[in-house]
Image 1 (cartoon, helix red, strand yellow):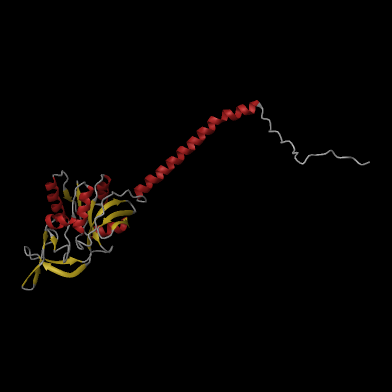
Image 2 (cartoon, rainbow, N blue to C red):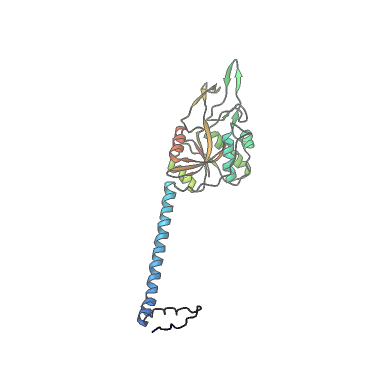
Length: 263
């Protein structure tokens, strides 16, 4: 006997399976557990934030992150190809809010003496006392004392309470203390990352008879950050630079730990 199947419309779809019934006591348990789950999530978030903060703080301490002081970039070229001291001092003074110009500093404030020749002998100043030569031409360098003296003359005329201090001999921790207080520091390093190197150019200091052989790679920059592993400088030859802390301290110490701070 043939059975006739009931007619099913093509538009027909089977009824959806009903949602599983959850007893009232189970629903109450789920709701009761919500505060605990929220508390756990909050604790996890706090722990994660604390971990990130500790990692950041450790990174700052170790120099993985550097918070460099935002000193203006002042480039010595093309006006003062040998005027790194005046350019660096202008940068530090501008950071302190002064409208300082490197040309004014080089020729009107930082003590400077030209070279001159008598009977074939060349004479000039001690770099400990004045800039030797012309920073726009045949010029060499000066060290911390004349830069500090020029800065103080400028600051006195500007009516500023700031004063420049020759802090030659300062340690790495001393440099970090200045930077932590918001004070950039003028420092002497070398242009090539090497130890100081003598040139073939020499002269006699007339007041003492001392013969000075000029350094071929002396350079003055502004230190803006010094971590445990890295350092940041404003280099008037090229702008902002990042060095390893070891590279910076090697040059700084080989150059006699010379530095000037405005406080």
